[in-house]
Image (cartoon, rainbow, N blue to C red; front, side, top):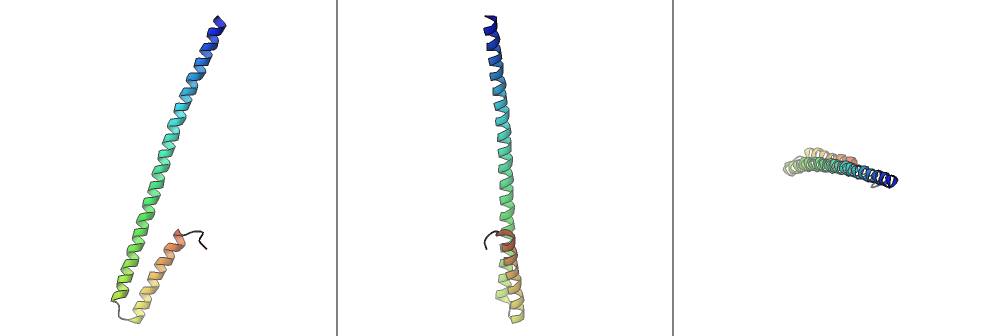
Length: 97
């Protein structure tokens, strides 16, 4: 009888340790998933705001080209605009060759 009681104590101990380990693992996995979610959202927001900045710059340059009268000035602004577009596409569009 004493041996049977000893086995039950060991089984309950192993069960409790297993449950505690599962809870700790679950808490760690949840924490890591939340950290990954925050990091991903921050990267998205940074890229979005960077894109908005590029679009604003290009919009400004295109507005200037509409107002210019000189062909030399138009060529200069067109080159700047093209440079902005190429700069953005080179740094953000990968593997599309």
